[in-house]
Length: 307
Image 1 (spheres, helix red, strand yellow):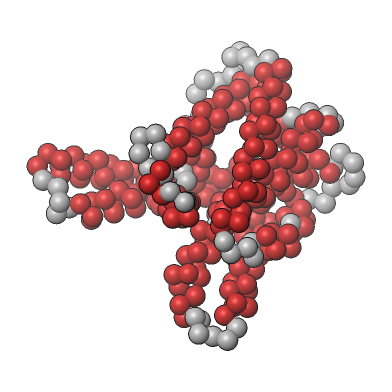
Image 2 (image 1 turned 60 degrees about the vertical axis):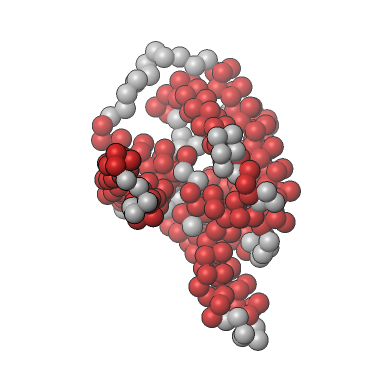
């Protein structure tokens, strides 16, 4: 659900950046609320496979938009002069939370694998997961490095806000990425509704005469909840860092390590057992440290900005 909140803020700030060039702005919170009804309607779609064509189009739009962003950053002239090679130590927890959010896809891995026509192609050295994550790491590295070298300390929470505000191509990129993330919202949301309905509430209301209405009510409530949270903290950079540190450092690092120990404790012997324990204890400590320090730092900066 945290990813959905981040996506909402991203959509709102990019649409706001374009609309404000032609009319009076309404504030990020209002733009978030404007997308409430469309998000409710699209998230009434029950079958994830029906979203596959839209997701494919969104991915293509994202790739084209990233290529245009790279063009803008290269045209500006990336330079190492006046660029700090290492950031301040006090900001490292924010960086940690942002990185964890960027590369951590733990929330959608299992649901996507379950919905694939050939799930066996998901894992493996050259499987769908490794290919997808490899491409993501390369894209993040290129856009992040070139963006910082081009804009330095003035780099916004999303580099799209650094693009020329009055150029039509840049505005199209912002709207296109906002549309792409709008579609991606449904994929992240699918995980939350799958857990809440199929594993908890659904079985309890299975024989209820209005089970369909109850499901749609739950779907609507979860969308409204994400909109409310996003409108409460419409700061993209801080929201990304907070969610990455608070949720994904535990769900993506600490908990999987603990699960591996519990699953293979009696099946592993000798030096492999020692290695598994050492590795997973280190991962658990690292994840918990990131959770505590990253969450504290993010909340501190959110309070300083909005209170």
